[in-house]
Image (cartoon, rainbow, N blue to C red):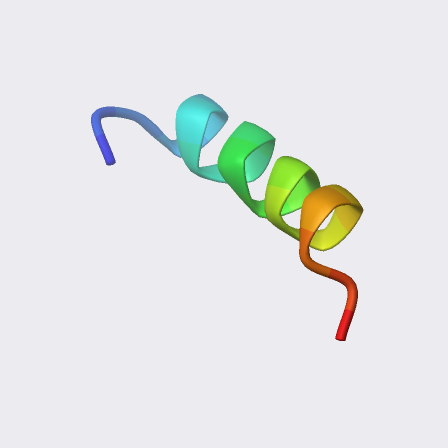
Length: 20
């Protein structure tokens, strides 16, 4: 993770794509 912003984006995308 490069920045906190990207970390947040990846977290949101992760929840959106992998919702288990």
